[in-house]
Length: 208
Image (cartoon, rainbow, N blue to C red; front, top):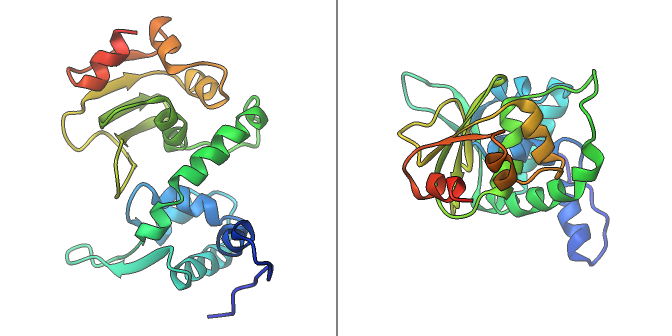
């Protein structure tokens, strides 16, 4: 592997940027927060990245201890990438970056790609407590592990078991939440988000 470029500055922010400051690295982390992902799945959910750049960034992340590559047991027998504990510690960094970037989001442009699970992190910022939340959009379904101490914080598709809460909303409402224009509690109160389920999270949202 090639030697990592460095700012050569004795500063923790500079050292952090040595590891995650390259284009695409933090977006790869965003995808791997969903748990182990195959290279082909990562490439599909990172529209615009070249195969060479994606492969290079993944190698850098392995070298720097942010991600690992392992082979699934049969019948899968495919290789997957997943975050290390060190890589998982970037969740609050991405959340803070997302909060800061809300003012830049604006309306969706014609050239903007969109994946339903990209709304996972903004919704996580709106939820308190612990539990499994299923989110249903016209663009697709995903689920959130609210309050997860480690491991995946979200995943594609419906929840793997009965969720503590189920949210049904449209992409416009999700976008408003992501831009910071709308609070989840207000969206529930206004009927823009339908909440079902008998878990603590569902009850708390219905009682707002």
